[in-house]
Image (cartoon, rainbow, N blue to C red):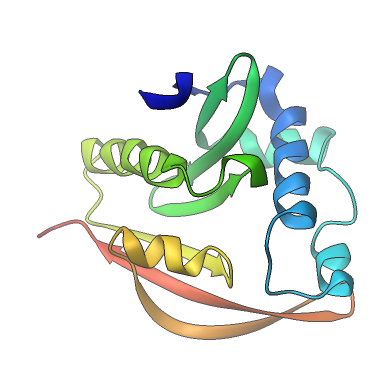
Amino acid sequence: MGDGITLRRAGPADHDVLGAVMYDAVHNGPGRYSEAQRRAWMPGPRRGPDWDARLAGQIIMLAEHEGEIAGFMSLAPPDYVDFAYIRPAWQGRGLFRQLYNKIEDMARASGQTRLTVHASLMAQPAFTAVGFAIVTPETVEVRGETLDRFAMEKRLDG
């Protein structure tokens, strides 16, 4: 793989750094949400027992470069892409597609015929590029702020 990136499955020892990757992506990457919306969405890096429990049942693929996690994507069985975050310094290098292809391969291997996601305004173009279609635009309230996002779906049976 180019850029010295390796893909691997994440384990419990990676959970805290995954929370830091999310925080970095939300707060330091290009965005279409205000600072107040970003703070509401992610007031701090996720960590601790609730975070560990949320990730415990998921299949998580991460992209790593020289020991640093550049991004990750997760599949909450059976068919929900729960997390997809790339550190700002690694965006635009094809990591999203590489991680997504691994997630889709695993979903197909388990017999899934579709994948679903709730994509942020930043993630929606990347999900569209790998074949997802918008099912419906949504607005959610998080800590007193409203955030627009998209419910999306990709059929795998074709």
